[in-house]
Amino acid sequence: MPDFTSSDSFRKNGFVLIENVLDCDEVARLRVKLSKDFSRHTRTMETIRYFLENKELHALQFNPKIIGKLKEVVGDDFTYVNNIEIQCNSFGLNGRKDGWHPDCGSEVADISNQYLFESGYLFGKVGVFLQDNTLEFGGGIDALVGGHRAFRNFGNPFFNYVFWKLASEFQHKVGKKITVPVKAGSAVYFDSRLPHRSSPGTLIQGAGKKMARVELPPEHSKYVLYWEATDSRGARDFLRNAQKRAILEDAANGSELFFTEYLGYVYPEHYPSSYKRLVELSASVRIASIDPMRAMCFRTLYQNQTHDLDSIERIGLSPAP
Ligand SMILES: O=C(O)CCC(=O)C(=O)O
Image (spheres, rainbow, N blue to C red):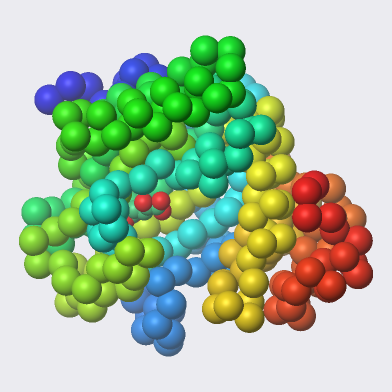
């Protein structure tokens, strides 16, 4: 088995495994809490509001092992984007590619986002897993090793896109796909361009094209906390694209207004003191957010749950920020 735990693995393989972030007792306590809270509804995930209300969850972002590894990979300029997802029994396995996808799908579809092809580009998702990844129940992610390297810069947006399209089809057919050996209490930091999917699990049924919550016995429930880590430039580019996505969210069509919600949180204004204290103590973590005026507009849209174009224009957001 190659060494997925050294910081080089992020550049080389597209992900790095961070082992033993939490001990058994910490995992057990978090599982009890999440099991209780998720039993109150049927949603697949909790988002930033719930995360900031619960100290034991936001403390995970400041775990010394996670911070240490992110510093090794990203450097001292590392920054969090808090598009928080706390997923429960959530699996996405269908579609033409059986659930395989990069996270930057909406960014690469917009040809103006050439940053994805730059050699120094660094953006990824951190996931903290509260169960082992097993053959029967999944519990972690599968990864297409090195798949992020399909993003090559030929100095021409059209060639960049076409090469990526062809290379990612080729990789999907012949590339090396592995189940990342996640244990309860470990974390993974993976490149947003890396094709990955929920590890399937032979006993998992009912997973949809989009992430769907499936029924599992409580002792096998799957819980994962995700957020993004990058450098200051990566955060700026990502948040610009996220605003375009937020504007296209439409509550009337059943969309959850996920982007609209988290973009409304500005650091430090909208964060509790328990979180701010952790940022201060860490002395190195930066929290990215958008311009406060724009954030206020997104908060209004989220509160009203209205997303028609009229209301977007009325509160002063243009569809192309
Ligand atoms: O944890 C999982 O099941 C995979 C999640 C995933 O692919 C995603 O959030 O993009």
